[in-house]
Amino acid sequence: MDAGGLRFGIVVSRFNEAITRRLYAGALEALTKYGAEAGQVEAVQVPGAFELPVAALHLARSGTVHAVIALGAVIRGETPHFQFVAEGATVGLTQVALQTGVPVAFGVLTCDTLAQAEARTGAGAANKGYEAACAALEMARLLRARPAR
Image 1 (tube, helix red, strand yellow):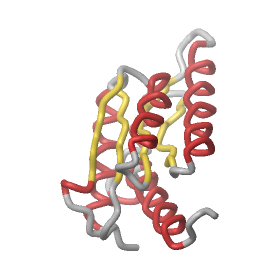
Image 2 (image 1 turned 180 degrees about the vertical axis):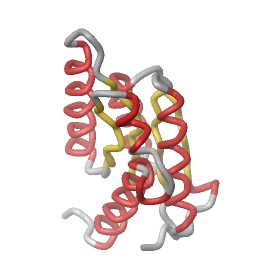
Image 3 (image 1 turned 120 degrees about the vertical axis):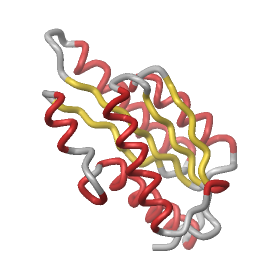
Image 4 (image 1 turned 135 degrees about the vertical axis):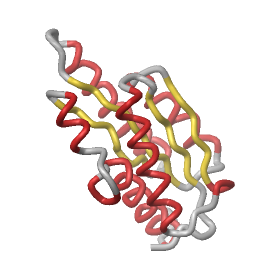
């Protein structure tokens, strides 16, 4: 994979920041590994996972990115709130990709415990942010090679 000539938008949730910071670091690690430079990446922060879709839509519609990487962490609590936030983020991000034709890589953890989230933010490919960035890169390359008609 090669990130040359591609631009990426990264939308990061601040909620559960200890986790999302690590997801962001993993995404940057992957993009850098495959040749992306700082000027090829535009990152924005949003309050929580529920706000990821609108920021992703804004980036996708800007015409300045070839793919968007959405990063967040929703950890189950004692109320059904977890389900509503996770589902809203998932459906919203899917709609952004389908409505704009810009790939949106899903790097939103939906975990029962903090320990599960931490286990998914390790080094290299053990980091779901890294994995999401690789998916974004692959999809951006695919769509660039096969433009819509």
